[in-house]
Amino acid sequence: MKKLLTLGLMLFTLNIFSQMEKLEGTWKSEGTEYITSIFYKKGKFTFVNVGPEKIKEVVVNKGKNFVTTRLDNLANGYKVLIKYTLLTNDTFEAEFIGDWQGVLIYKKYNE
Figure (tube, one colour):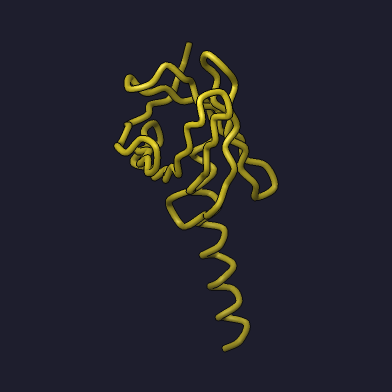
């Protein structure tokens, strides 16, 4: 029974990571001038936003189908938490809370 429980937990963990790996790539939303690149390696995410300036985000939480980050733009003092939720393989939702509140839909960027 213990082995079965361990196997079930391992499969659940692999499913979470394979689902979250789909966030990896370059993304664009019509609601922002920034292009967001998401890298996933060895269970860790790196978020980089490229636009008028390059801004990194820090991951503060991960779940089965979401990642939450903190973005601090030192150039203008803008601070937000962003919850990224995968909708399809080519689309995700970003919910912003902080100095700006709202939801943006991102699509895979292929230029």
